[in-house]
Amino acid sequence: MSWLVSLLVLSALIFFHELGHYLMARAVGVYVEVFSIGFGKKLFSFHKWGTQWSISAIPLGGYVKMKGQDDSDPTKISLDKDSYNVKTPIQKIMILLAGPFANFVLAFVLYFIIALGQPNVLSPVIGDVVKDSPAFVANLKSNDTIRSINGVEIKTWEEMAKSISNAKGSIDLEILRDGFVEHKILTPKISKTTNMYGETISKKMIGISSAGVTHKLELGLVESISYATNQTIFASTMIFTGLQKLIVGDVPAKDLGGVISIVKLTSDATDAGWMSVLFFAGLISVNLGVLNLLPIPALDGGHIMFNLYEFITKHTPSEDIVLKLTMAGWVLLFSLMGLGLYNDISRLVG
Image (cartoon, one colour):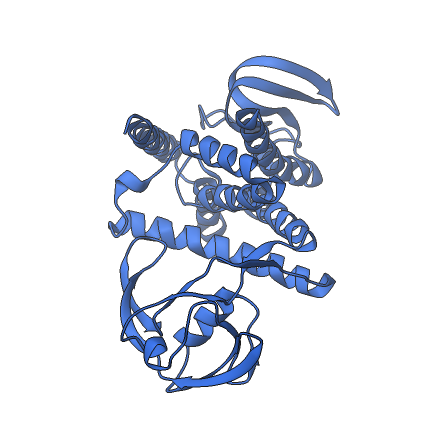
């Protein structure tokens, strides 16, 4: 059942991406011939509003086929007034940006729903204390709760870690121990740790770990909007940075995952509850938005690149160049998909 939920989630995210393209295309007067979720043989289709709406056999993506646009053969054009080809570069860019934008909006909505549902977050409760660390010297103990740092209230473990990392000089910790409030003065020490990309970094720490205690994060309307905005920005930044590190080699290619990883992780999130599914769906939605903005021909970002060229130079790119770059883009995409699939299978076998 959880695998079915995974496919439904992935299909829903693709649907919203393509819906963004569809709505903007219709808004600027472009005729949309086909709206498909999936590729290959059509399993189900119907005609509505002049468009063929389809669900196809291979649920690994989707597409909106506009009049005069054909990624399989970029040389096919139409000069009718409702064709994609006759629209201005700005109008085309608006259509292309609408898909990724829909993914970012959807992610914001999902994170906003999570915020209203009061998500669980790590409480600033100390678990282990590292021997001879600043926390050890200051006599911090397991089960101490950090209430404030330098007079600023601390509600979550993340807030505490960020405050310590950004501290300048000594800090004043207000802790709750056995029902009594105490103050501890200590100086964070720069230590080695690993970040989310597996890289070794240096940051200020005091030598404590979390006790694993959680609590409900109660947020009002304005706070929920802020939470959703911050989560969307954080997810976008994380994915952009991850891609950059993958390209320059800071993150090994073996860490790249494919559709099997996405389905499995979504399946695991399903087992953990609806809020985990929404959180992971928001992350994948941002992922789709970011990846489609990459300047690779055959992706939205590649088409945006061609239209920016036309807007700046007032000349359309050579059909031969567009065709060759688009084919190269497809080769690159299929290579990346193949690598992701190979890594997925290797992990499963391992």
